[in-house]
Image 1 (tube, one colour):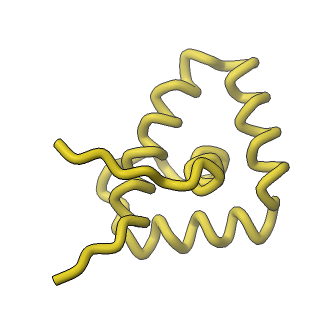
Image 2 (spheres, helix red, strand yellow):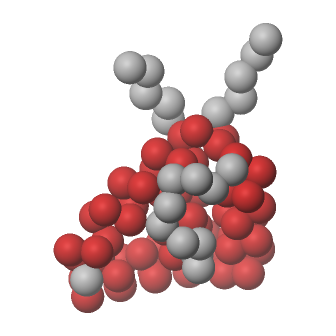
Image 3 (cartoon, one colour):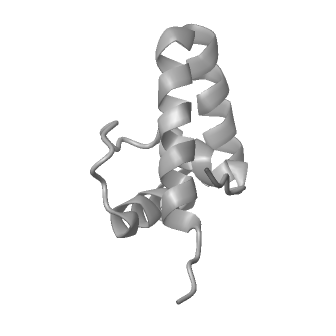
Length: 81
C-alpha cells in the first residue's frame, strides 16, 4: 500500500466542511469542497474548528479526520499516465 502525503490544511478543510462523511464522493467534489471551505474560512479557522471538534467530540473527530485524510490523499494526488 502506498501512502501519499497531503498538505494537512487540505485535510482540515474537508474535516470541518459540511460534506457528508461518505466514501463515494468523487475527486472533483472533494477538491471543490476543500477549495470552497478554505476560501470561506481560511486555514487558521479550519485548524481552530478542527481543534474545537477534537476537544468537544473526540469520538466523532477521529473517524472523520481519518476519512478526510483518505479522501484528500485520493483526490489531491496527481497521477501520470
